Length: 153
Image (cartoon, rainbow, N blue to C red; front, side):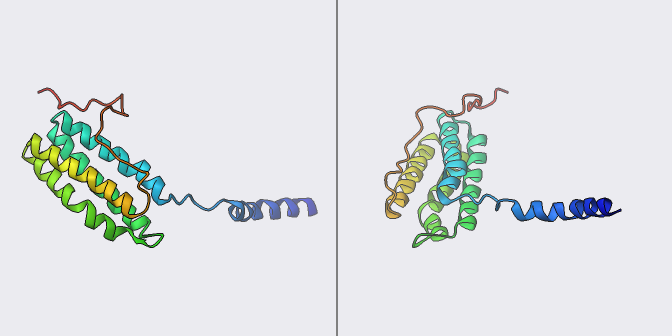
């Protein structure tokens, strides 16, 4: 009977002991979030614009906006910088301009807004003392398994 009680006590204690030893959940930092969520959306948005795939550009523009919103919520303060304020001051207008250009199927206007967005990203990096992070217009796809051309009817 003693062995049975010992085993029962061990089984009952195991979940609590395992939970106490579990590592803390992963909390991505600002750089992680930018690399995982913002940069791929920026790239896909640019590639969609290059291919004049306006429905997809509209979609990716919205996804990029949401990625910035998640970054602002997850990392509201980085060093001495107010991240939501930096995002609002730098990328809100270019994102609005990109959305309007994509909805209007206006390639030259889209290209200008995309350059403005890219310049805003770089200006933000410089103001946050991470100017070594230089974003550029895409010249190749990091997504070889995705076709950015508009679907054929």
